[in-house]
Length: 192
Image (cartoon, rainbow, N blue to C red; front, top):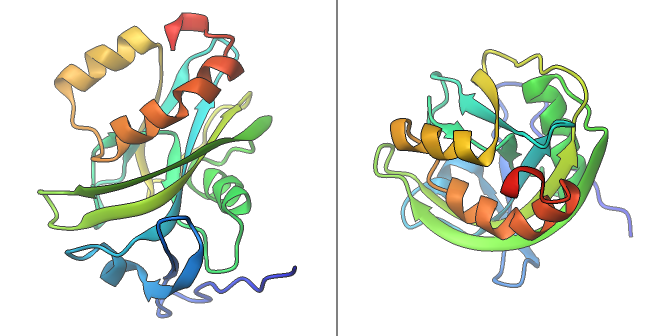
């Protein structure tokens, strides 16, 4: 069945998200900011974990100008499909937009639902999140409006970074849910 994709065509149009039920079935749409305001409305999202050929995870630190979770470290890329857009297409699109990359491999890694309030912003991440893992061979070319900096890390380096830096509220939940697919993708190099 074909779906039309609804997206904002210019900066003045609101960005719309798909609202879903607890099984991930679409039940409507909501403007992005309103979906993230307390108490949070369950909506479709995606999270991407890309690895280099050495089995290191590509992290990004979110741009300081972002209204939600600015300046915190997080997984390679995350976001929301436009209504009618598949999570896979949205994930590939946003990796290109945020990091200037096209993954060499990108595969589904399951879904996870969560509700994480962000005390710093007062916003709520209440998401039905589609997870993707993949490989990247090119160097990132981050869009400075989206990404402050990037870093490739081993599990040990990730542990060290988490001890000294702030990470997104959702990071641990999505990484833990994606770990089986990450281990398969990386042949469990580095002990993911």
